[in-house]
Length: 115
Length: 115
DNA sequence: ATCGTTCATCGTAAATATACGATGGGAAAA
DNA sequence: TTTTCCCATCGTATATTTACGATGAACGAT
Image (cartoon, rainbow over all chains, first blue to last red; front, side):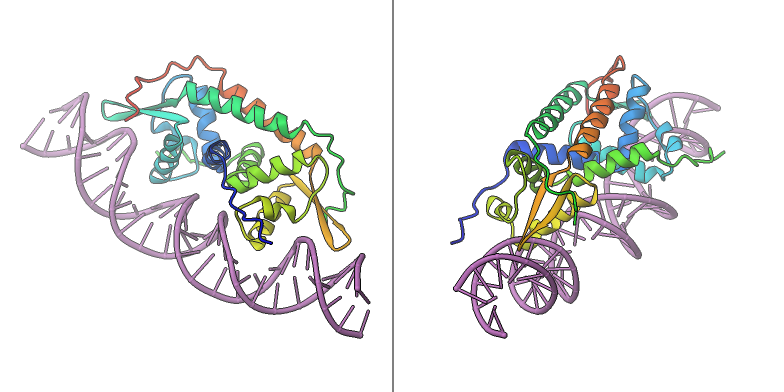
């Protein structure tokens, strides 16, 4: 018995989960959108565009920076944020692959009682 | 002063964040993969394929079920899980749109000091 | 040098998430 | 009916997340 159960998670699974975690809050979903719409960088205007205090926005930015989705650049007294294009492309690609693979099977769904 | 800061998050932002949250753990990333590979349903084999206790796997399944990414179907003593095809297509599409829009701008990145 | 602006960080409180053992219910099998 | 198997849920401990006010560092402007 006890099938060893050694299997750890792959780097890929951990990576996807980590990115998903970084995007798992509406504020961070929106921040990515805003930074991208602003085309280039931005700073504390984010605070005005979000229903959150400055300290909280800063924390969310930190989380996005942690996974590399955005970059911050000190520009005088302000800090200029922008999306990290390379990382964004990688992530876009990885999630597309992930979802596409999920969609591949025949998907003989169980009776949709959903329980 | 105080620009009102009324802006709440849109349903769309909340939806994307909620799905991302459901996928924000390696176990759940993997469970989706496993359920999809098994083509149709599955049950406690998941427990054998994951480095987690049965109660924990059950909790992860519950989270995936919460957002509608999977369905459970009682089949005798077992419970049969499978991905929810419709929801998966919707999510695939929504994330693709989200990422593609993020990728649209010119992305005049800030100096990559990253700070 | 002092002031105002812009942020990051600290400290902290409350809420959520993660993990597991133990318990219990429901259905097939004995 | 009793046992067995499969799974959900409860209870619980620990860790992480979220949010905010307060503080302080960095810089430009005065």
